[in-house]
Structure formats: C-alpha cells, structure tokens
Image 1 (tube, rainbow, N blue to C red):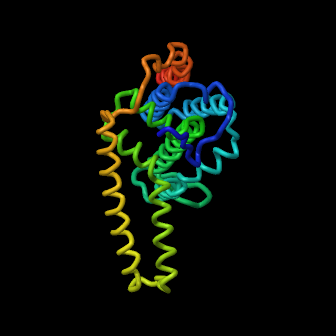
Image 2: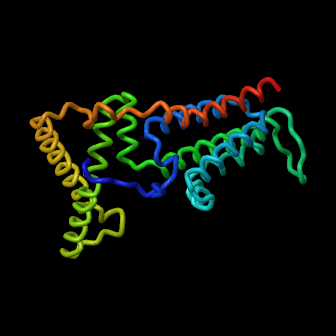
Image 3: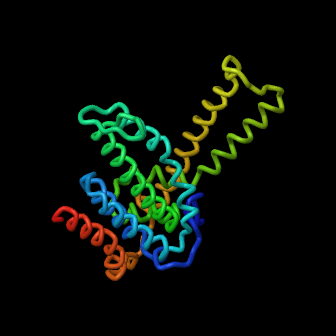
Length: 253
C-alpha cells in the first residue's frame, strides 16, 4: 500500500473537502444518507434542501456538475423501475394526460428517485474527494472489521497484477489459435479462469505469510498522531447537522 492508488471516480483537486480526513467524510456521508432515507416521502421540499446541501459541497470540492450528472446515470435501472410503479400500483388513482396513475405508485416512484439520486450523488462526492487507499484507511480508523479492510487492501494492491495475468492468458490463447466466440467454445476460457483463481489464491497465501512474518497484525500501519483534528470533525458535521435541521423543520411544518 505504499504507492498511491486512485480509482476512476477520484478527482485530483485542491479543496477543503479533499483535505478532510477520510473517516470524517465517511461518517458525514453515512449520517446524511440515513437522514435522507428516514425522511417521509411526502416532504417534497426537504429533498430540495438536501440537494442544495450537496450542491454546496460539490462547489466547495470543485466537482463539476456535469461530472456528477454523467456518473449518476448508474441509477438509471432503478429509475426505470420507479417509472412503472404508477401504472401498476393499487389504491386511489388519478388521471393525467389520459393515463390512469396510482397515487401510491407516484409516491413510491418519487421516493425511489429522490432518495436514490441523493444517495448516489453523496457517494460520488465521497469517491471524488477521497482516494481508494484513504477510503480503506478511513474504514480502518473507524474500526471496521479487519476481515473487510484486509480483503479490500489486498484487492486494491493486487488487482492490477491479476488483470495483467488475465491479459497474458488471453494473449496465450489467441497465440494458440483459440478465440472462443460461442457458448460451446468457452472451455479454454473456463480453464483460464480456474487457473487464474488458483494462481491468485497461492499468491495471496504467500504474500500474507510473508507479511505476518514481518509483523503484520491485520491492520494498516498507523502513527500516534494520525487522528483527525477536532476542527475537521466539526467541519464535516456541518452536512449531517444541516440535513437533520431540514428534516426536523419538515417534520414540524
């Protein structure tokens, strides 16, 4: 983990949000998402307030709106599912442009779209401002179970190695004139997958034993002064606190 590993969603920027410790950002996004999820679906203006908060964070983090919009399309399958709910829902119905729509289905579609979009945008902002290594480090500082951080650490460290092994196997198959294109020709591909699994398993076991022999105890190396300053916790808390304020105002209104 000595080398800095970035992921495709990370944006290298110089901003106050990027400089925050990863654990404070993880907690802030988690609390924000929880508040969004428990907000009643009929509090329409509250969701608009949440979106404004995320827009403020995006501006502070210098994350372009177009970048967020393109990557938020990952939720399209859920949006398509939500669109069907008004047509197949039960209960009271309304007529709109000659279409008979279920009121409960409309609320359900809005609930999926609003909360899903806000959750995706919050996750994208976290990914855009935090490298993969820092995300794992933040989870480790939050005392995430070691089995998860270990798996994620090894995956991050050796994913490129496994991808290179898979590429060499494919080149070897092609060099031998075997290029499966149909279902009944995938024997060589299946054999390659099995060989790659065994190779990865054996390599992982050797690397782990070598790390244990050098004093590895299941957690990432940490310094005594690596705790996030109180000021960063206060700054990150502004997002969930403002979100909770909007939710409370919506509930009392």
